[in-house]
Image (tube, helix red, strand yellow):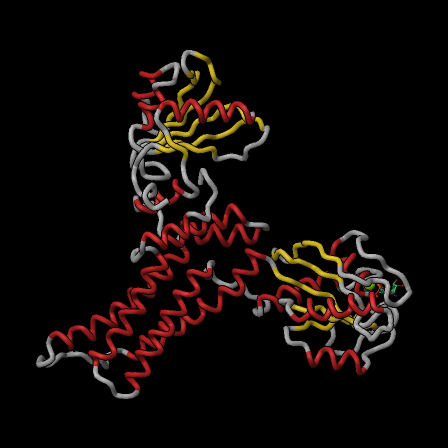
Length: 448
Ligand SMILES: Nc1nc2c(ncn2[C@@H]2O[C@H](COP(=O)(O)OP(=O)(O)O)[C@@H](O)[C@H]2O)c(=O)[nH]1
Ligand SMILES: [Mg+2]
């Protein structure tokens, strides 16, 4: 892949799904794109003379045979997605039509684009930094509107701007150190201490906040695992159905009805949530039921949040208290059956039967998952890659500051600050390797 990535040879790929549809879009980019398409186009001269951002209508022909009537959108370098001369061919959306158009383009001199190759070229030509390139993939994959919104903020440059600002701060601190290193004998007029530890601590704080933001951004992207647990008959399945707004899980007055687990994807306050209804937690002599119970415990132990349903008709019993206390993951207690008796102070009261309290419960769940009640979180980091680089910068800065504290000399301290700076440069892509780029862009779809 590396050998092919990174040249400007003409490439073409279908950008829309390979399925019967009204229209399909085939993207072309690279050297001589327009004159290559002109070779198989009914109005070649018009296409080659077409102004930027115009559309030309005509027929695509292959060896004298009419393939399809198409529209060609024309982009001149550098005003295109990739920064190269490009075109988008809109043809009819049949699977066979698309195949025939691609075959025609191959005959004219285009090769099939690799996954993410268009965006890769856009990055190489300075159209976007790596945080923006990664957000393109996020937008395509966003499951909810909120997830899409957050990715769009990164595409608009919110994250890049934060990283650039952190780099400026670090660079200023480093410049202070380098001057002393370069001119050790000069009397420098500075009212600041060298290195500027106060500024470094401020950068460190912001980096730590960014590192923590990944947990939340990941929830928006991948969704949260929310497991409903509780004793038999507490109303777990009723609550599951309520949250799902359909009767999926079987509800009966007989304890031990749900023996396996049932799951469904729902959206809570813009967060994609994988909701799981489990078997009631109690000891059973029935082997099959006991297996279900064991699975319930396993699921509950790897959840992002456990929704622990208390049977309001019976109140809190020692078994409930034990489970709540022992939970290895965050747990939200819910007092169900509030229609039968009032809930005690401090509990979220709901009734799976009437639906009372369900909207507030949704807010509680989102707040518990994001661990930031009632507050919009700023744009954070969105990939494992970004997270590991932020953490590297945090470690480097911590290391540097520890040396300052220990009274070490500047020549020993400086490399730590430089390393932090390099890590941030890797996030935006100013510092990059072929391997890194390949890993990122190969995750894209073909045509992106
Ligand atoms: N009054 C009342 N009954 C409920 C409520 N939620 C569930 N139930 C009843 O409690 C029984 C057990 O419910 P189910 O959802 O199967 O509990 P699970 O065993 O925890 O899954 C059923 O008869 C439900 O109709 C509620 O909010 N109020
Ligand atoms: Mg049940």
